[in-house]
Amino acid sequence: MNIMTVNQVYSPPELPQYLKDVYDLKAIVGIPTDEELVGIHSVIQMARKAAEIRGLGDPLLLVRISEHLFCAQMGEARYRSAYLDVVLPENATYTPPALPAHINVHLEPINGIPSGEEVVKVQEAIRLYQQFANVPSMFNPYVNVDLSQHLFDIQMARYTQHAREKNIMQCETPSSNTVKPATNSDEVSSLTTNNAGSGADSTQSLESVQTIQGSIIRDAVEKSNQLSEEANKLMERANILIERSNELMERSSSRPTEQASQDSAKFSEIFERMNGHLEHSNNLAGRLAKPIETMGNTLQTINRVLVRIQHAIVRSHKGNTTSAFDCLINERGEVPALSLITDRSSIADASKGLPISVRSIDPVISGVNQEFRIGNAWLGKYLRFYGIAGDLFEDDIGVRLKEGQEDVARLRLRQFLSSCLG
Image (cartoon, rainbow, N blue to C red; front, top):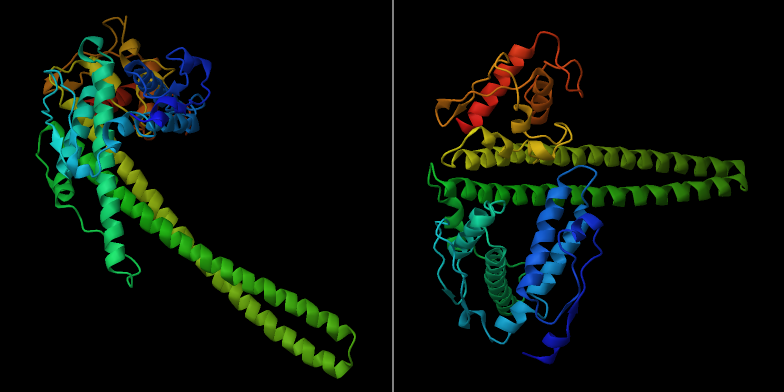
């Protein structure tokens, strides 16, 4: 271990009181302890939940806390002390932590450069393990920290190898403007393999959607930037023409009538050219709006796919009961207990203490009808929360149902919940 590792100080961002109550982050000197890393992960988890609540969380603060975790994992800390003394990544061995028996993913030590399949396997293990974060008997925060560090280490190894290969290719072909890296066959196989009916199906679908999303956004933004640059150039040329026309007007006022007529004709010609440029600029602006609109529609489609994937993950759990309804997110990524629309109340809370006279909506869970009652006062809130009410509301923003529509509302809520968990 070098002197810089011992003396390096990593200062966290200033936290609001509700995050300090979770864990009060202090400056880290040298290599961070397990307790310090567990504390950072706990704060990130709470900050992420708060960011999902409109008006409460701070996304920028979440970014700064994540950067603090990166520094602790990489800068002069754990990654440096463990791997930086190894000359080449292919000479290192990356050993994963031992996983409990209820995680059905077996991780083995990785020798040399990790493959795409090995990275996806570690990501799957992390996702499966973090599903038990609210069950203390099945979740160890220290194992979570070690898993996160293991994923960080192998991703850094792949990045280092890719960066070195890119530099070598650029040195060998100096006349080429761009070098397009070859697609890793392991990464392709990890995205295209899809075992129907398993938990891995949902995870791999999510990875594929994220890849498509990144490609679409990059293409749309690149096209938008090109159109914007061309429009800016045309506006600059138009400004130059306006300045020249003003100069001609000043000169015409001090010259004979004949010269003034010539200048006036030249001014008219310049003005017509300027109008042509402005019209072209307006056309470019119209074309610029189309990629942005397409990108917005694509993102909405991707968002709906991600929501259905999350519902499929919940549905795949064995032994679901009506309490699983509280795990189903809406298109904003919220669960009922964290939404202002539902007064931050769970569906289970809304069904407690109701008399038998309240009609059950009888949702289907794993092929079996379940007795489940919900009062009229809550129907509109949960239909608005999941966006399934259609024309049943009195207005476009409230949660009050039209008179006499309670039975229709119960039917729609039953169909939605049954489609998610049936």
